Length: 76
Image (cartoon, rainbow, N blue to C red):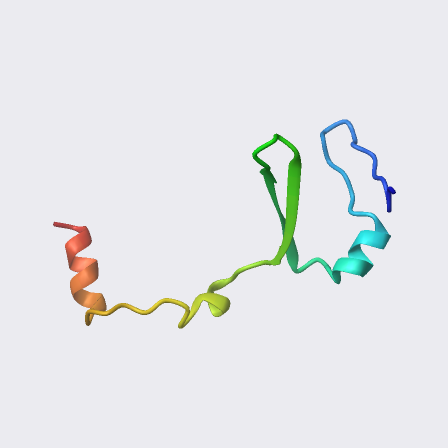
């Protein structure tokens, strides 16, 4: 059963059908991730856009770091 369809325009752009946007609760703050399954079928996933505020505190290092020393090491 096909829930919705969308047209591919001349420059390969398309729109996400309203039915899909509502069911997946997506808006302009989302991006689409495209992939191919092992059998070659296209797969898509919707995820929220990432920005610097989303990334703060997302990563933790076991060792202590010093931002000044890290910057100096870039120029060595």
